[in-house]
Image (cartoon, rainbow, N blue to C red; front, side, top):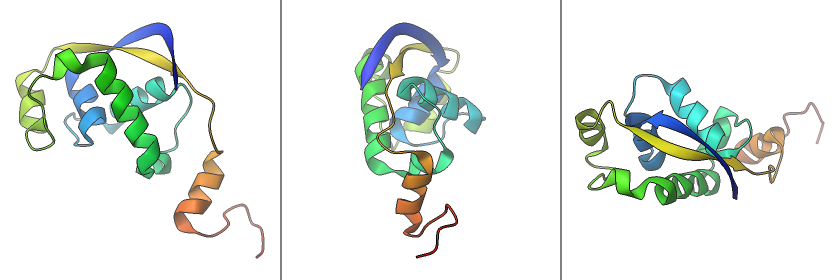
Length: 119
């Protein structure tokens, strides 16, 4: 995934949520916004359930902001994020073309067509 030289500040609890997969903020829409920013394209919510996609996103957030996350783990993410509330993390925007369109990834997840095609 290519990262652009355009960055945006995200509240640390949002970045921790993306990095750990543990919801550490009040608004899911903020987490979704951060994921789309890092991906560089719109992300449908079902795509967040694709392990390989989210692992790439988590790794990119970690690479860009590792110094901000000293001591954070999945086990202490919520407590850690609350302790550091008010801090921000500067994250670069990604530029990535989709590997597959959202309907294809949905079909793969549910293992049946969703485009109205008959089998």
